[in-house]
Image 1 (spheres, rainbow, N blue to C red):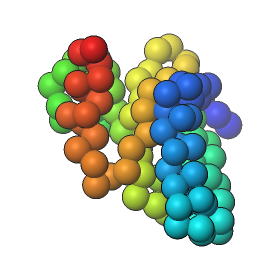
Image 2 (cartoon, one colour):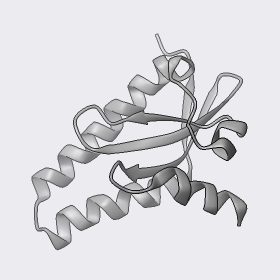
Image 3 (cartoon, helix red, strand yellow):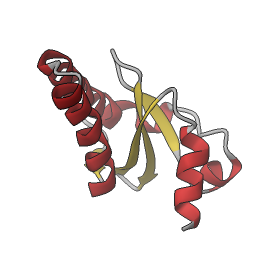
Length: 110
């Protein structure tokens, strides 16, 4: 049973699409692109069940704004999200090798 309704922001969806487009059109690996997409869908489903059990981000500004991160199940991507009531808002998706907390914190300041 899902505990939370998960809403993916247009920005986060655009970020995910950029990663998938890179895999599919630059690296010419359609299977990898499809696998990342499926992993994103499965991670979204898992998030609907475990959102409030994951720890807050370490970055002070993100922690202050209630942001948490969930890693994809099989790939090195993650979703940054916040909880409002019974709704989870995924505001960004990054590759884990990026300095995602500082990048996202800078985006929040703009």
